[in-house]
Image 1 (cartoon, rainbow, N blue to C red):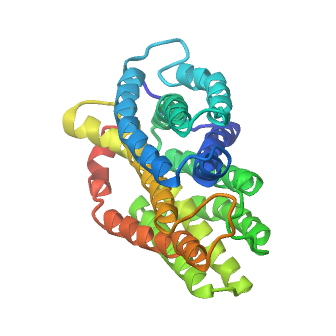
Image 2 (image 1 turned 180 degrees about the horizontal axis):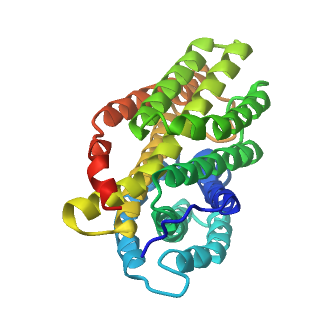
Length: 352
């Protein structure tokens, strides 16, 4: 029987920190790995962009498999915890392998090595971690407000630790003086969310949170795109889009228990693992497309490692980090408008 008691504060904090720890790999993949492959390992940007997308397709398969494994797991530690514990040493091994491409190999050999190690880390190790971590949320509590709070702590851990990790490892394609300032403001924005989201979550549904986050992301990226070299406006845009990430992460994780309860009410089946894998598939496909788009854009404008970037390359990078984000934010907005699972909340919560 699932836990109906309130989750202690320290457990919520621990869950948030754990989610943030897993975010470090995402930061490496999103902000550092493409540059490492192209500028250090000297593999073509187009080939790496294609690898990112191909691996995400395979990743979807491993997500579904892992979701089924979690659902069928029975141990004294529960369904999800054994897999979370196993993912820790595997993550250490995976990152070491990932960041040690044999530089003396041919480009084809290096690309093969990149495929094997990226699949191991992203499609196997991170899948074990991600599915079990997400599945843990509906297993910890069935209280609606408590699950929202857990999702909020998860989003905060993801955002704050992600920002810290990103600031430490991100190679600056365009070196701007506002970078450190924007990261500081982003952390402040996430801390504010800690105080604001629990207070308003009792009045707003999760769809409203998602809409708010999508709008803030679109507006933030648009301001950054219009800012040009105006440091103040770049900081303002970065803060606004950082504020938008919190509600989206929080609401997406908080929706997982709702979908679990909906499935139990509608079909008589509880499937925390498979539903968590569905959430993970969507997240990873988004990361894969985002990484691939960056690589394809750089390849299309003739980016070459260790060569002074041309005005065309600089413009392409600026577009990728501003208007591309605004466009994807609009896509999120449209998808959220189609979301309707919460309209059945009264029915499935009666059975919870």
